[in-house]
Image: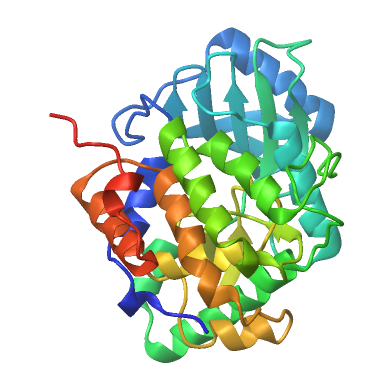
Length: 345
């Protein structure tokens, strides 16, 4: 049912971060800026409202910085705690729906035992400050793309079983229909899967010609989507968004992060993308996943359509991305030229 990383194109683990990164991001090792005195005072006010008047910021490390957008790790004292802080102004290059991200994290924490960040504070109103913000607990762990190449076969299988179990539990969070989630993680307007997928494709594929060509292709396969059922779908379970930590010599799942794109979708889309990315599936994953959630016999017919959507959503038309898109189109039996923009001369 599942195909593992040896059968997929290489280097997706390296390219995913590049595809998702905001514009003008600087290398975190090239600078060590500080917040302005006004911003730091405002942030300290927020933290003291949550943790008490004695709370102070001992140290900050920037993880991402772009125009009007920062992500930083803050080490606090009184209490001794590390938190992730995201700040976004009106010119931020990414959507930053912090209230929605917080609500989805609470949904996962309520319905599952999967480790996700805890929300400390969130506000997107701009009423008090010149930026939207979210403060969340810091999950201790290493990114999966750093961990999996170092593990032996037995350690890998144990880790894949944990990952398969966690992904199935997320997918088992139910919805009545398909569609985009509101700021409180509810589904205000639902529809059939193909209609919701068309809306999403048109929103996420930046080139309108490619979006309409993709919609037309899915319409040709409409009969293959008759048995899909809605569930929470992450849509970005790449190796940078899965954390593992070592406890007494054993690697354990420490967190799944970045629910920015999550929706009430068809969860097997996550499976297709995970198969596409190197290192995200291996022996043990499928057994653990299917122990909690069945996989449709029709999934193999739909897998390539999900993978093509990823190619079009995060289209950085590098030689590697073109090669991957050609491969998917070839397996679908459609001309690759119809799903790629011409090279920039």
